[in-house]
Length: 569
Image (tube, rainbow, N blue to C red; front, side):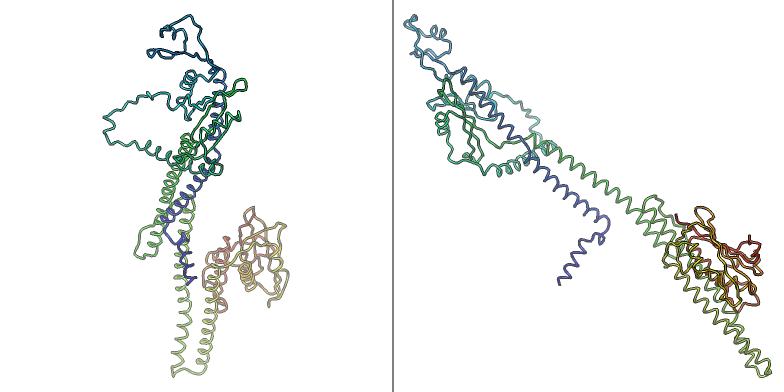
């Protein structure tokens, strides 16, 4: 059962079990998934390594110090102690105050208070410089009384124009809509990741007044982080306002630690847009490539079907390309042509075999008919029986040679090639010897080159033995056979087999390699005419050639066979 489940899983994950379109869809989905993983990793590192919070914190700390220093230098004043008419309002300018309020005695000097953090100049400074910041600035005096708050200084006066005709239409600006959704979700994830980072160091039971008291007492800055009533991480920074070693007030800045970082979100959005563009282009190109791949493959499939269709008489047009599909198309075409050629050869071979067997069978039939005749004398009867035996022997020889020929042709298609040194091979196998019945000696002459040829060693040896046996069969007793090997050029080596026999008429040079052909009329029973045909097929499988040529050696004026083989560099 477990093996069956594993087999099903393997088949599911084996892309070759599906068609190319489905394979491409799966590969594209894998690319998209890996891209999303990389995008998530990129965004996570973008958030982790971003210095927005640190830079913002440094800026706020600098503002805190600047506010404290400014108030120390400009807002610690002695203010007049007076009583005023209910019609008058307090003004910073004393002269204006005297004129607007009917003082009983304008000549009396104004009584001033002890130095204190003056409310009006403090509010003016906070209003002008920190009313529009993303943090809340609060100023407390030494008596813990709030005298300025940046969130309560003025009403917002920004005016926004709204075109009612546009808002009434249900038109969606998709790019902006998508950008807003992405930025909002990015900020949500960003704040979630950073919240987990800062949760470990939050303070508890933080109260503003307690921080004011501690700052006045310690005369130094304080920093606290905590979660407020809205569960937002809030940070408070305090700094004392000191003059002559006396604390006149406290600057308190409070802000949310985690705010929307739209700049960072837009960086991520730009990368996401590039990722989407890359994925879309990749998918588009992959389907274009798939189309260019599937179309010729379908064409090749159709062609193979038509090749098998015996009723198709039209010429098939194979795809012409320079890539691997073109190579496949050429190979299929070559294989088809070779298969057709082999079929034609098989038909011709069958016809030749039938023709060759028909003659001895006809002779045997005639002999049998004559033997059954009652008018034949004993002498003629014995002659017929001898002819009858000769025909049977000839048929037996012919059948053996046909079997050997068929086996050799089949082996050619599956033979293994190896790289051999032709000169070394000839010397090892055909050194001087005279083991044949005619006492014919064999000599080899080679050049000094390292002639490397890719072929099947056993089949090449069979060719050489066939040619040598052919030379021995037509040569005189005690004569010689010469084998030479010479590098013709950079691409070819020539091997020649000479003998000192009667030779072969060059008019027969194109016929002697045909099956069942022989020019030995008197010795026909011993030769089926398949040896040279086998040699021709073997040499042809090596991409070489074999032919009968005129001898160029005066000492060997008989037959001369020339074998050309391609060299490997």
